[in-house]
Amino acid sequence: MGEAIGSMLTSAVGIAISPLPLIAVILMLATPRGRTNGTAFTAGWVLTLAAVVAAVVAGGSGLNTDEAKPTWAHWLKLALGVLFVVLAARQWHDRPRAGRVAAPPTWMRAVDRFTPAKSAGLAAALVAANPKNLVLAVGGAVSIATSGASGAGKTVAGALMVVIGSLCTLVPLGVYLLGGDRATRVLEEWKAWMATHNSAIMTTVLALLGTKYIGDAVSGLA
Image (cartoon, rainbow, N blue to C red; front, side, top):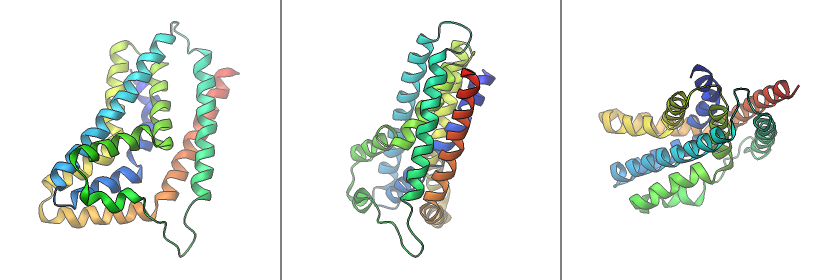
């Protein structure tokens, strides 16, 4: 089980520090229906991430019939590593230049009109339709599926990956529900910091993951 947890940890942390879901849930919590919409968004995120991880772990475990890590897993890791590097380069290329601020997505300007169902749907889209988050989720789940852990160990590692990867929504919701009067100020500070450093954060995470995946794949194929 230790191998399964260790192999997915970097991917899970990469998902957890994604700025977009954190900014989205903070924006929702600031609306009149903040408690309901924020909870719906968090639930949508957790359930969608759990579905992706469970599907990949189940499918990958079914293909992994011997004790040794299968060759296809190394090739898939190599492909994911290259994709991480490409996404990192794209993230850096598209970063706002000095003195400029990136225009927020259209949905950010319409958050105050969201229903709980639309909030949950946005969370699902940010997991399954966002290339960076989807690749991170698939990469981490593949690492669990092809590890030498037992079925129970893979289940625990998958659940832990979902919890860690959902901290970007669970923590803001927890601060809002438990933080009292200081919650709004704290969340605004987090939102401002993440929005300012979005490109740098994701470029660094994707580049590091890409390098690790490529290195692991080359070592396994050698």
